[in-house]
Image (cartoon, rainbow, N blue to C red; front, side, top):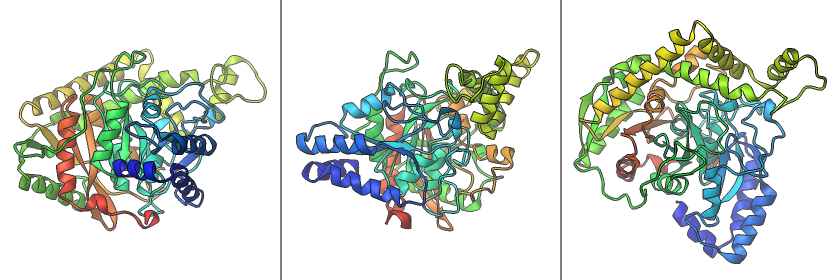
Length: 470
């Protein structure tokens, strides 16, 4: 789609196309955007129409999750504590996008500081799912996924700490990829949990996801965890001869029957295309959620300590002693979910509990990583549901954090292991999209994308769009 759009823009008007998107957003009920960069985006589109510059994304508008720094565009992480913050620099991925001719159109809604599975914790209010406005779009990159699914942006970037790209991709019926840890620079991504998060693309097709990944990936000297990349273009090799692992731990109890049926049908379809499948075991999956939330909350406690109203963030009108000011600033600036996670993370890191919780969680993380390493000695890819059920209703789970956290059961192990995974549409349940998750070994994105493309081309699900996008 992006390749065709690029051709249309070269022969037509980027400004006219962009204005159409902005008009659509202004009349939208999705609440997918926190801020629109209308003036700068239109100016850049006019410049493109005059000069017709080159680049892989020449003239293509893109929406950016509100946790990724964009020079001159307000970046809030959907939190009151960062309202009014305008970064003086671009994240590495934004630099890459601009270098390839893309136009930054605005910042998308998200769970506050990426802490959530539903985009309900945003200070801007919840984003709505384009397939059913009473349901969540997933989180935390819900605004990015809803914008793409709802026809308000041709592509978007999100970030994935425990499923925050793949969950909304599944719920909104689009393609979302979480890269191998280190493949995409985190410079300019406002940190939640450094050892887990990666920036990833959200698009309507696998080919578009591959193109965006090709643009944003690669080494950045400002992020010492980043590495060189492969090429993710020309993925026509198919799945013939590939071995797909199916873990029992990702099926059965807690999984919606229609979700399980759709994923098995997807596995059977890939078998028809020439792949084979076999059972694999990931025995430490049962401990993944507990390990993930201890590690993520502990890192959040450390990372968010900077937002105290003194160095960064919201500041109350009158200062008192340091402890009182610090407490009041954070109580007023952070929402309930962020406060909960910071408190739990601080507790896990405190004297007497560090070894009992945080260090034990790190040991479990190692076991989970070893599970994947053993599995990938037998198979090329692992297939599973992305989410155990379709999108739930707004307000249905937000009052019960444990129930909400359980939704991440099939996505958080991937972040703990640092391996890549992609979610793509594989069916519907009562009109709501279902996501197939394909998981690969470290830096095997090309193999994963190749299989995803073969499946996508053999099925019709990516061609279906919600009525709001019609």
